[in-house]
Amino acid sequence: MKTGYITHPDFLAHDTGDDHPESPKRLSVLDEHILGQAHSPLQDQLKIITPKRNSALYRWISEIHIPSYIDALKNKIPKTGRIYLDADTPYSPGSLKAAEMAVSGVLTAVDQVMDGTLNNAFCALRPPGHHAEPDRAMGFCLFNNVAVAARYIQKKYHLPKVFIIDWDVHHGNGTQNAFYDDASVFYLSSHQFPCYPGTGSTKENGRGLGEGTTLNLPLRAGTNDAELLRIFEKVLPDAFATFQPDFILISAGFDAHRDDPLAALEITDTGFAEMTNIVLSLAETHCQGRIVSCLEGGYHLHALAQSVKKHLSVLSKP
Image (cartoon, rainbow, N blue to C red; front, side):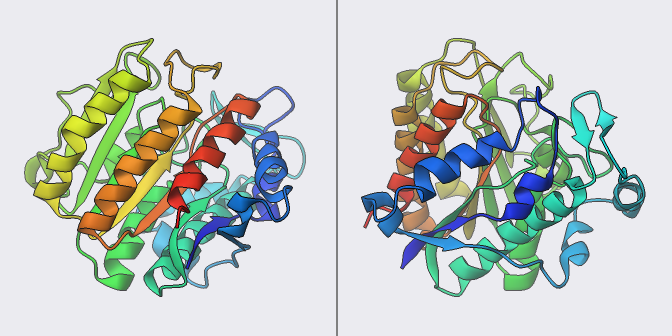
């Protein structure tokens, strides 16, 4: 079995404008560095998958997002140009098509991991998702891809416990809020703090039945590989052993890279590889290696490409 690499031309249809950091160029550079190198050792370990639209797509999206928000997205599609759903989130004629296919891509990855076609998968998708709230777009995000996938895993495959690891440099407020009072989904986030969107303090650890299944690891500006890896090695094994997950989802943002323009951490592509290795080892111990990783942030194109290559090299190692 191989590692799935989920890609689709519809992901490029989300037109954010020439100066927006979350641009189609992010995926074009991944295609160039990963798919453009025919018969490379890495590509030989990947199964390239172009997903189809999920036949029950909005049944699953509505597990996370409320009907009025979904209807607003459908009704606001501009005929030309772009409108803004919030100060940071443009919406173009192709944006909804891209967002729908992004969710479909993650669900396809889950299906193929569950049926044994794939060992694990990485979804090279856009728009990203972890800031999207149940009732609104936010921070470049339309649908919360990972949150929808968590409910899909639970309800389609009857796997009760899903662990979400979010290492994007920005806290995933939308994902946290989706499961804040839910003991069946563990949300762990490492992120620069203070930083956008302002959430993610250590005091935020869940509510009601969900108390204790949100774990925030705020990082000071300048945090490097060694510091973050020490935190992962200290915290993750205990969290996994206590929670006993059935499936792992990664919100894989690569904007914690030292070259990224949107924040101030000092993680390298090697650091991302080592983080991936920690998670992969825990997945093999606790949940038969079931991992689906989904692209979130990462805005320095060369750093993004190199980091994703290292991430994939670990996921796909024989």
